Image (tube, rainbow, N blue to C red; front, side, top):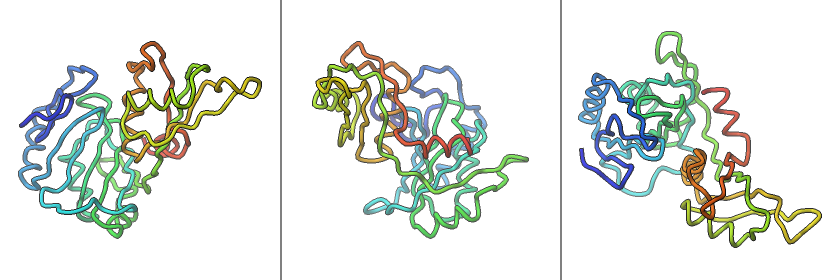
Length: 242
């Protein structure tokens, strides 16, 4: 295994490589199964900022698959990893990338995102894998991926301008495209104490949410903010399928 940037592992993701300092470990039997999976497919596995990434294919040349190739997978058993999940997903078609959201190094959050190489394969996954029994009495939930690029950020000091909020959000997160900041009704020199932050992609927004959700990132050095998806679609999907 080779090491990438801090918090990232390329090759087989380290059993204890999790940003929250958790001492939990993936069982040795699962680690061996993951190595066998990589030996068969050649796909890299990495873990960074609360998610495991399987892919892209080592032989892939060119741009990533177009929009419409990704599906949301919910109801994943919390102790399931790529060694069990990938063979099931491969029944629908050729995989480009699997992103498994993690709670700790040895426990996932029950959901992830799967990108196939074509829209037709994603459609096949929607038809054939939804309610698929992945373990005895454990059924996957598969839906179209919601491409939400916008976060709600509450707790913004009311004396901060849009330019100041944009500068600070770009300092602590990557991929910020636009800041929406509404003025107070009674005093238009102040904001309402919250902002909507739009990112260049859903992935960038998800990474920013993960980074700020723990409360360990303070804006302007002393301001703890509340962060969540600006629209309810993804949260609703997770509640139904998590």
